[in-house]
Amino acid sequence: GATRFINKQASIITEFDGIALYLPDIGHFIKCISNGFFNLAGKDNTLKGAALLEASRIKAISTDITKILKEYGKQMKCIEDECGDNTSLLEGKLNVAREAAMKRINAIIPHHCNDHSSCGRA
Image 1 (spheres, rainbow, N blue to C red):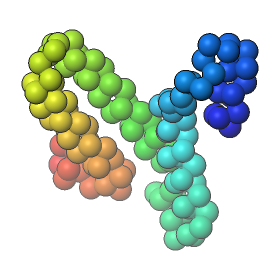
Image 2 (cartoon, rainbow, N blue to C red):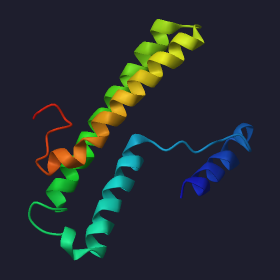
Image 3 (cartoon, rainbow, N blue to C red):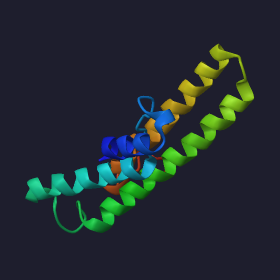
Image 4 (tube, rainbow, N blue to C red):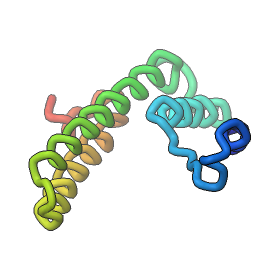
């Protein structure tokens, strides 16, 4: 996996030997979430079928999570640029943005189950 890839890179570019780190990208993260839903549906037949954990719903959930994470990443960059070296202001604004993103992510599953009370579409 990733460690093997890092070791191969380090053998080619020796300057990076011992300092290369694996940082998961958003695509890998979303793939893990998607695979988790498919595994969950495979283990519990009550979650399979129409209007449950079917392939199209898992794809929609994964897409929604990706959108929120990308928006949060852009927002983080803007906040960092805006706050500069003011670490207390930066920390406060990042915490507010993180909480808002988490609230949106927490609303995704209920949203896809037609509970719109926490996603603003009620």
